[in-house]
Length: 317
Ligand code: M7G
Image (tube, rainbow, N blue to C red):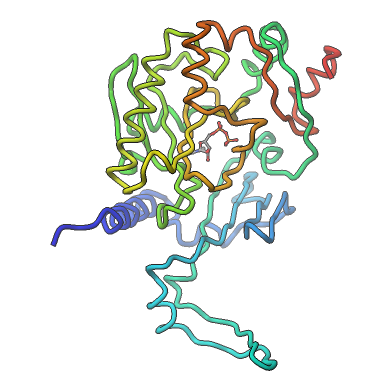
């Protein structure tokens, strides 16, 4: 019988996990046994996620633990193979603790090690301020700052050069001008489409963000939009009408990439103050080739973001 796309996805996921464990010197399985917690950077009871700062082998690390959604296709397994302990009962109401078998009780874990001070800040809960950035502000304040201070994009180059996550690539167009790699974002475990999240990373290396886009990039953006939607339909049986396709401004990583998430999934940074729909970006560039060079753009910055300090110093806040 031919495999369903879900079976193929799961098989792929398992393969990736095996490769990762095999390739890690410490075997992966015991990696976190020596983790020493320093502080909780942030957490959310509703999202069932916690961001922890600590040390791993004397190096600063950030560990993210996240409980994943309960999948419909595992319910029979869950009901048959779990144990149930009664907590309380009252009239027609009763509550229990269900002890699921280990394979249905996993916690998605992300480790950033060594983590920089900027990573620690990224995951720390903080007050935000909305910044108004004109084209001139970008040139005089933002650009000099990001040239000195931004996150390394080594992980992006590793993907483009097939040095990491090669097995996870969902689609690639190798063209140097309009080509890109589409793969699952590391926030998505690919077990359910409810939180579907892929990113398209462009092959071209000189486009930092939305601000660098001009009408010459329209073919690249259209290619990503079109091929991305087709691939997600084919691979995950998820139609374009249920997708949100956007860019972040400011991004965390200054190498152009596009976010593909399920419509209705509240991915971090998908709000109007940070997300720019790819369809709008294309149209804006069609009506004004220099739209993103000249427009004032608005975005939130966290209280201790160095860029916010620069805007304050320049009297722009
Ligand atoms: P962004 O808009 O630059 O910043 O998006 P954000 O992280 O503040 O949203 C970068 C996207 O790349 C995010 O959705 C990340 O979850 C994702 N991402 C980051 N890293 C380091 C990796 C990685 O190593 N692999 C994959 N597949 N995705 C990553």
